Image 1: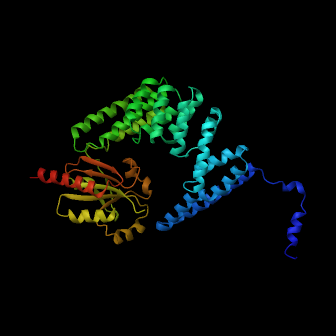
Image 2: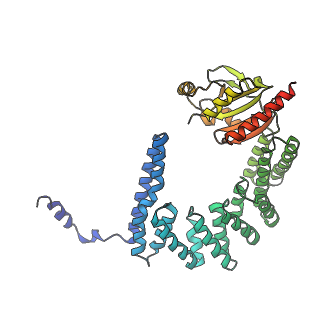
Image 3: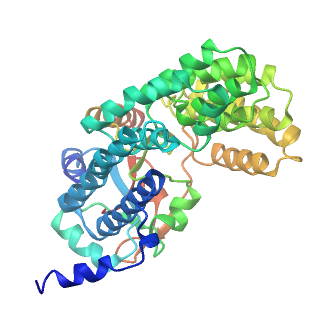
Length: 318
Length: 106
C-alpha cells in the first residue's frame, strides 16, 4: 500500500495534462531519443581505439535497427496518418539491415509509385541516403511520368543521392538530355570531376553542349580539367604521353579561369589550385624539393637521395 | 604498411633505393615509442605540430594517408598512390625503376 501511494497521487493530476501523445508526437519523441543515443555512441567512439572502437562503430550502425520496430509500429497502427509515410521513410533511411527494414522498404516502394508526383518530389527534397533500391523505384517513376519540373526534381534528387551508382548515372544522362537547366546539374559537375562516375567525360561534354548557364559550363570545364589531370598520374611509364595529357588539362583549367573566373570566383580559385598542382607534383615532373627536419630534429633534403629510386611515404601512426 | 615497408627496406638494402617518410603525427615524443616498437629505421621529414595540416602535406595537397609517391633515380615522379595499391603493384613498380637506375648508371 505504501508503495502504491505515489502512483495514486500522480493520478490526481488534472485530466487535460494527460492527453495521450498523437502518433506524430510519438514518432518525434522516438527520433529525438535516437539522435541523443547516436550522439552518445559517437562521443564514446571518439574516445576509443582499435577493436573497441570498431565495436562502437557496429553499435552505431545497429542503432537504427533497434528503433525500427517501435517506429514501424506507429506506421502500422496509424496507416491513414501522414506520420506513417514519414515513419516508413525514416526506417529505410536509418535502419541498415534489420528485418523491419525489408518490410518498410516494400511499403516505401509502393508509396513512391502511388504518391502524387508533387508530394513525392517535396518529400525527397529532405531525405537522402535511402539506398540504391529506393533510387531504382524513383527512377522508374520518373521515366513513366510526362516531362515536368517535378520529374526534373526527381532526377536531380537521384543525381545528388549517388551519381556514382548505375541508377545515378542513368539519371544524369536523362537530366542532361531533357532538363539541361536543372540546378542539380551544377552540383553533378563536381562529383563527375572526381572520377568515380563512368562515362563522366562524355556526360560533361554533353553538359557543355546543352547548358546555357555560364556557371554550369564553367563547372563542367573545371571538372573536365580535373578528370584529365587525374589521368596524368597513371602515365608514369609513358612520360611523353603524360606531358600531352597534362597540356590538355592545362587548357581546360585556363579556359575555366579566362572565360568563367571573373563571374564565378569559386571556379577561378579551384582551377588555379589545380593548375598549381599540375605544375608542382604530378607524374612526369621533377619532384619538388623538401627541406625540413627529421624526427630527431636534424635537417635533411629530399634531393640528398638523387640517384636512388625513392618511395616517398606520407604517413602517420593512427 | 609497416611490415611491408620493413621488408622492402631490408630486401632492397643493397639496391639504389630509399624509403623516405613525411610523418604527420603532431607529437614527436609519443612517436618515439612507435619508431622503436615497429622498428622504423628509415628517415622521415616531420610535418610539424599541426599534424595532417602541416606545411609539407598542405603544399603537396595530400588529402589522405598514406599517400605515396614513387620517384625515379633522375628525380622524376613516376607513380602517385592515394592509399597503398597493394604490395604486388608497389613491388613491381619499384623493381622496374631500380632496373632503370642500374641500367642508367652503367
